[in-house]
Length: 304
Image 1 (cartoon, rainbow, N blue to C red):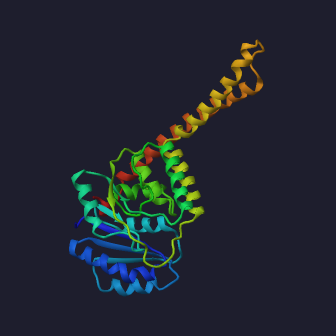
Image 2: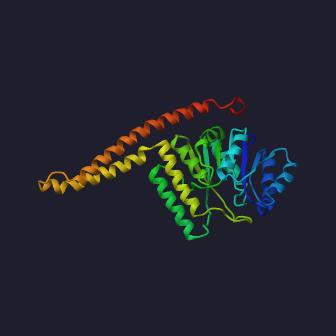
């Protein structure tokens, strides 16, 4: 697996690194996989632990953020540094099984996939509250974009690094990066598949996922759909307004009283939203054309 780089964002993971990182290093050393660990402004001993370990292994590179920039920002830093055809993201909390890396890699090669998402098969949510939040995010996502991917926020994803690097520009710096990068790959017509992986309890530390994280994720999903397929949103709103105005006007028309001001207003606003959607669609096409041009301008030392 010489053409694979493992990227691991780390934020205050001193407890898990001492236990989990040796397993990761052993696997990567045996399979010739490069490792990039991005310390995202940790305030505990994460930096010291990583510095000590990185001196022992040539295939392990550590990058430090001076401040906490976010999960997505750490992955972007790793992407900009990676020089292999594929990258795979892995959380540093010890939940992922390193042996699953081989399965995701083989699936990408055999099925010629641009992204392979590790679908957590034995995931147990910490609370009904978080389960409800994830369900709402999935429902909103599937309404806005057609996808057969179930575990959108999985932290274990193998990706074509050239595509991921190009699309990461429009991805957020927070936890929503995991969801958004998958949706972009799908919306751009790339092959995205899922493969089941096992997951364990996190080793020490506390999860930083909260209600705010879920809210930010929903906002980012709406933003990215507006960027790539705005008519999905504008068209739906237009249809609701126009249909409501039309249905409202029918009984009044049948009574011979003409068209009410309220129903006409809804119909006109619906038409306006449709026209706005067409304009947003044209802007979206222009943005996507620019992204394609930028993709073709990737420097030679990053070519795959």
